[in-house]
Every structure is written in structure tokens, then in C-alpha cells.
Length: 339
Ligand code: DGY
Image (cartoon, rainbow, N blue to C red):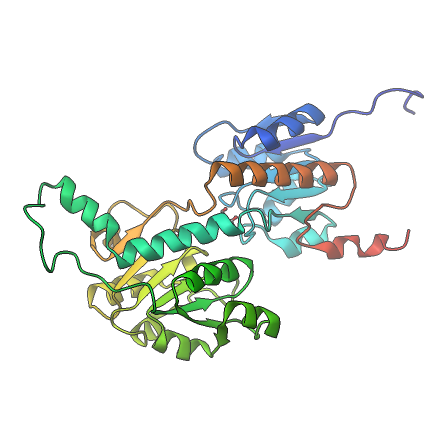
């Protein structure tokens, strides 16, 4: 039996990468924390070893959390805190079955992610990356009346697939550009949201056929995997620009390559690819009408700090047996209701 007044052991946690101090400092202060300091994610076998006996783990979207990992962590694991709003790397059902709370970081990255979606949309339309490559290659000889022309953004039609928090933030930016805003989601948004954004709900196939720009803002699920497939790409207008800041597998990437190569659509701008990272010799990267950045939509200093603080708050609440501030699977708490 523990002696009266003996201090309780600090919770054991594994933090799967260096994160901003806003989150790391409170975790290190409160826990016996092992932090993976590599630039690359822990290799699977290291990750499995590192989680053994942990009360909590702070994971990134590069770390797969599944039954195998949960078995290795053992029965003491109380919380998986994912440093992202997306959680497709976590088998949430497996966690729920074991009563393990899963946390994510919603809300704090909405505007920053919408900023990057907008930057990609603008850059692809106005051929910013191509222009930069052109200048650096010494190809800029004179002002050209038809040099690097692209479509106008203002006044064009934007199709938003997934009108959640980030989709809405993208729509608000589009309002400033006088765009017609169409959206598709599993169900129409509240009329007050539609009214505020001037956004019209249409079936996905109508949206794809009518939009000059299509921006994807859905979670990756079995239903949304390859949502944008070969047939849908071919149904888009041939100047259309596809922007993806959601998850790479939402788009069939081989079909996207073929559509871009054949001029079935105008251009694509991707923050996410399938797989990540995309191989340097992937055929997509040989195309001038494809712009790719390395999954940086939430990468403003302020936002990454807030994500770190939120992930730490979830982790610490979880190891203390408290309700997470932002649980993905609140059903783990149902048994405790009313006590
Ligand atoms: C997320 O949070 O899901 C993003 O993809 C990374 O910030």
C-alpha cells in the first residue's frame, strides 16, 4: 500500500516529435516525457517500443495508431492526443473499444489553413510558381503580351467540397473576390450560414461541372477516398483549377496526373499528396500545371503554437483521467455521465 502523503508517480508519455514549446513545456513539466527529437517520424518499431507502458501519447498525422500500437502501449494507455485537426491516422474505433480518449486540434487552424488554400488557388491561377521558375531559369527576355496568362479569380465560380469550418473560411475569402460560391456537403448547411456566405448547395457532379475553381475540405474517410476520381476529373471544365488542402487520398492521384497531362482540367495546387511525401520523381512533378507544397497549410508560427498548446491540454487532461477539452470520441465518457 502506498504511504500516506507519498507523491504519485508522474504520468509516462511519449511525444512523437518536437513540437512548439507552447505545448512541449507543460508536458515535460508535468510528465515523465520521452520526446522523439528526430526530423523524421519514429520508425514503426521505435514507435512501438516507445509507447510501451505509456499513460498517454502525443502523435502526429505521420504516426499510425492502430490495434498493434495500442496492444504494445498496454492497458495503462488513457489518451492519444493527435497534433492535427484530422485524425485519419488513428483507428478511433479501436481506441474507443478500449476506453482510450482521442483528442485533436480543431478550430485553431481554420483561418491559417484557409489562407493557404487561398494562396494555392491564387498561385495556380496566376501561375506564380511557374513564373518564378521562368525567371530563375533566365528565360525572362521581355514583357510578353501573352506571357504566362491565366484565368481571373475575381468574379469566377468557386466550388467548395465540404463546407465545414475551413470550407466556410475559404468561402469568406471568396466573397471579397466577388465569386459565385457553390458548395457540396453530405447535407446542406444551416440557411443562416448559406445566407452569410451567399453559398448555394448543389450536387457534387453539378459543382464539378460548373466551377472554375474547386477546393476540397473533407475529412478522409472510406466515403471520401478517391472522391475526386477519373470520371469526376473528366467532368470538370477544361480550365478548372483543383485545390487540395484536405488529405491526398481524397483525389485519385494517377487520374489527376492524366487529367492534367491531357488538359482535361487546367491546373492543380496541392498541399497534400498520396503518399506523403510525394516522390521527387513522381510524374505529377513533371507538369508545369501542378503546384505542390509539403503539407504546410497550418504552418503559421502562431497556429502551430496553438495546436501544440491544445494537443498538450488534451494529453494532460487524458493522463489525469479528466475529460479532454476536444475529444474526437466523446462516447468514451458516456459511462461516466451523471457521476
Ligand atoms: C491537420 O491538422 O489535419 C492538418 O492536415 C495539419 O495541420
